[in-house]
Image 1 (cartoon, rainbow, N blue to C red):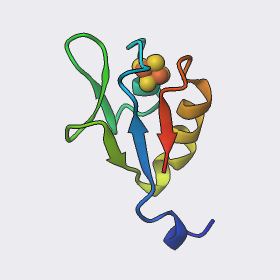
Image 2: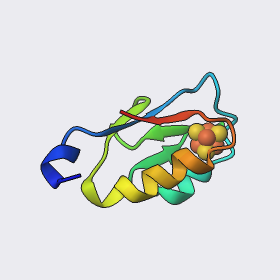
Image 3: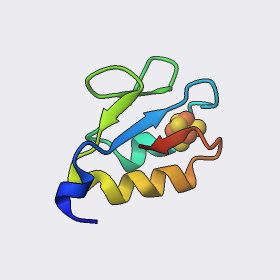
Image 4: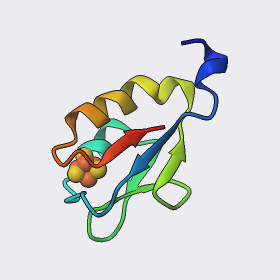
Length: 74
Ligand code: SF4
């Protein structure tokens, strides 16, 4: 996929599935933070974050490794 094709790609967290173990926040420490209960949040708030191009690979790893299948790339 070209850089232009990736523009607007976003990672979405489904908090109804998430158990807050934090695999995704360890893979994407500049993009996701954890709330006081350990659940991931987009660094700027909310459950969806637009991915920088250099986060795309780690985001794909997070989707693959999430034990609750709570992450989606759109
Ligand atoms: S890896 Fe999945 S289950 Fe774990 S904190 Fe992230 S979204 Fe939640």
